[in-house]
Image 1 (cartoon, rainbow, N blue to C red):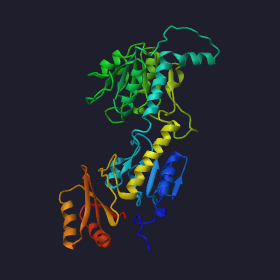
Image 2 (image 1 turned 180 degrees about the vertical axis):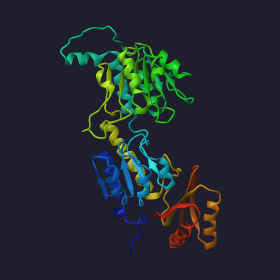
Image 3 (image 1 turned 30 degrees about the vertical axis):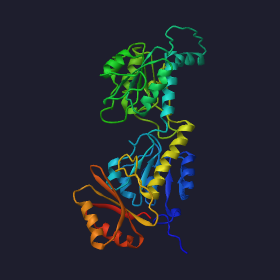
Image 4 (image 1 turned 60 degrees about the horizontal axis):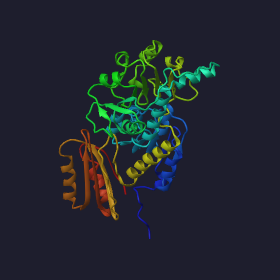
Length: 412
């Protein structure tokens, strides 16, 4: 007896491409789900090399270096979804993915602990002036002194952006005896004894450690520049482990040169090398009291393992049953399995009357819908329908002709 396939075509024909050395846990997760047609590359791809690869790929996994623009999505005729094995998705043109019915998934929670721990470590080192003492000792200069060296206990930590990372940092810092303040454009429910302040100026002028945890948006571009740095106390330190565009690096270099602040720790930069072989250029290289790290806030083995599992599982769920939960650019639908039925996925422009037209098709053809799920956002609608097996070809043919259809397929 022939067994009905689980998906619309064999899993070994569904092709995954994972770039930039995605953790082995992603490959293991895909393999356990039955997906073994997976190509893994340690580097990013760009230009013609990426365009050449993308035409035959169903699922693409990237980290932060690979850039996915409109021309890429136009060439990706088979692409079903993109997985960003990192927190951010600013390397992806989400709008171009959306209009082609391609959901984009990421891992917003898996490396929060790693980033928060790095910030705590940097705060301790900066308050103790360890970077300067370390640099001097490497040059043979023994500078044993307590002047300008402070404990973290009792110091004020100012967190700009109280999301997943900022809130976890808040808890860690308070457990060390720090007094925590936060500034966010939205009202937040602070954890522990943290206090939300009304203005960025109030936070930056009153705190000993300023840590930035905001997304990359037009509003956050150079949000910390000469004017904001001038608010800081000369004994305060600045830490940025969020996005490289948030801090005006030239302005920061100037205040460090003028000894207007005690130090800084910067993990992200406006321009970053495309590979480890490329030289890192920055005016911050000259300062002993500035910790500069190569975008490693989330680069721990634990975080990368968790990210690999989290994003790969989201791709598996979308491929297996159409679930789009937590997609950053796509209507979110969480779907149960319905054995014995065929599942159709219909992605369409969000215009009035589409659902009515879809339902009319089933009414006119006498096809029974066992279950139906619909979610929309401003631009796109996503309908999932389970129907009797014998009607799937007929339904697919008619649904493909509905006005506003972006893509329609039988999943299983």
